[in-house]
Image (tube, rainbow, N blue to C red; front, side, top):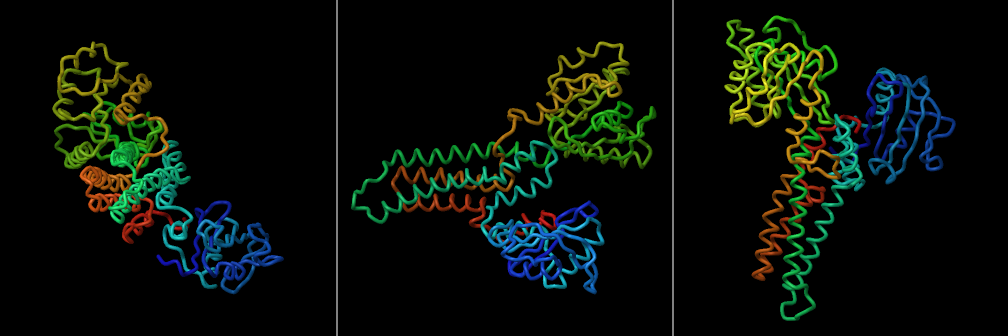
Length: 458
């Protein structure tokens, strides 16, 4: 992506009531006035005012579609460049023709994320804020949206910048000691320098401790519903989704392939996977489905292993143990408790391999579902607090913070021995990694990877 061309793109989903075409760059005003015509042209005299007019909707220059237009002059725009936005009637054809007219007038079609890329390059936001834009777009829960909005407002960036400022202060102290070793200036005591670096290290570790929460909030968890045939897996999927998504019949082996659906459970984004019942099968199609069941189980974050409480519960429990021994992400689920006439509460009492307490439910009546969701929430968060958080670092942020840790520890060791040159080198390396988080130092391929995840128009 370059920042020289004037770019244009449709910034709304095609087919809605209103379509917005955004033009950004040095020629935005000229192109905007070529595409849109009103009583008065867009200019400095009507900055940031929505004006009524018409737009060309074919390559002959006919002005047919009524549209609103607004001009935002650099640097007071989303991208930090001159920007013209045209708000026209929705519909793929109208917006496409206006966009074509902008291209004919000198604009280039924007690449994915190019508007936000330019906002970053022009200092309108740091890299953590830019990443928050795509987090907002892809948010599947209130937790994810709130976290992204806080990051977009600069919460994480401010914390990182505060750490960088403290490192720079220590660096200034160290460089002063190196430049004027004989002057005996009013330097900060060594113990205080070490304490300050240690405080920075503690803050870095606190941010790192939010990585698991950040991954869960942003990416969600993969929840697999597994068990033998005809134990109610598809019925449970339908109940959790609140719709009849999976076919349910009394016949064992109805589900022959994995079925995937996205949902939000207890404000946690979830990819739910209903699997083929695990058993010995002669049917080659069912065998393939069972193979996929095993593959899904291996990749799952959480597994609901369903057992039929109404028929041979001891055998059901034994089979579950054979397939789940040693796994910590299993929640055993006794289903069909409304049909059971046996005492199943003692079956799991003396089993040392069972990590989580079985939950009793009825997927047809909904009995026990809240307790199942309680167990699910507890397993997902573990010791983590599932309340809203101001910051929760992403995988990229965490990998860079992990690089900061040893450099801060190394700097403290060098300060103790008063090896100022090596201490300064360690602190500069720590500072570099923090700068990579906010974008002061960043490799082109990293930028390309980040902004390639954006949609066109953002």
